[in-house]
Image 1: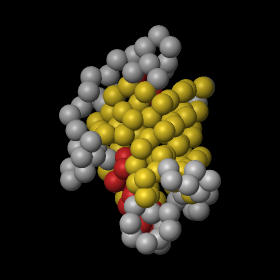
Image 2: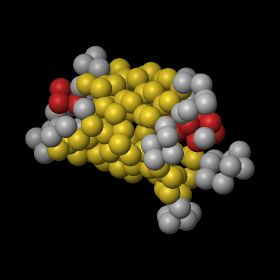
Image 3: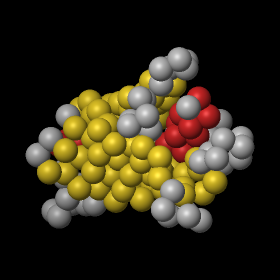
Length: 149
């Protein structure tokens, strides 16, 4: 599970300039996103073999995403028997997209389609890598998250 956690954190955190947040009339406002979100699902889907999926929450990991009002965030992945994996950087949002900018030494950003329903935030389609077959080589993957506040 250590490699899976590392890949998750690497995919979520990549260094890029922060974008200014702007709320849209068809999606959640940035203010409604601020808070502590806990994943009930953190599922990776193998791009080359979409039938292959791994939900790290179902395998015992916990994933927490804290979105701060100053547009910084912290993501924490705790996996039993592994060191805590904590990363911070910046975030922005538009009407239906949440962007998590990655911190050095990573590069780029991860964008998710998002929807907010009550206290449930659903993030889908984040492009990342994940080692599905434990061969120490990341395969192209998408990440879908369901989080509650």
